[in-house]
Length: 135
Image (tube, rainbow, N blue to C red; front, side):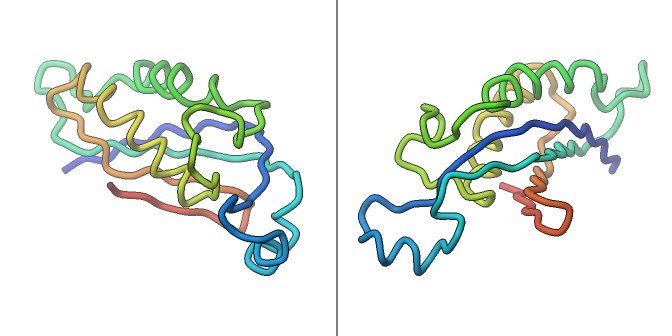
């Protein structure tokens, strides 16, 4: 089994808030993250599988870059996440973002490759805080 990873960067803002809870309860749960703020995120998309015998590639990383940029990065970079359709009805925590990105990327990768499978998405909110989602 081989694993390949593409890493990209984007900057976004959000506000962590559950509209079904009181203002006081939101502050209690989310603290200062209940206010408008932003992050410089890094996303790592890892694929797994056996490389193609003819090319030696699991997937051409230029193709993975194109998919990642078009389907995720270009849609969230310098955006307010709470207003995006992909997060409609979803609190844009790093955990939820990773899961949404998985749901977007998995079918796109399967569309272009029969051998590469989406293995994980790592989303770094800060240098010290990150989430890994494996579907």
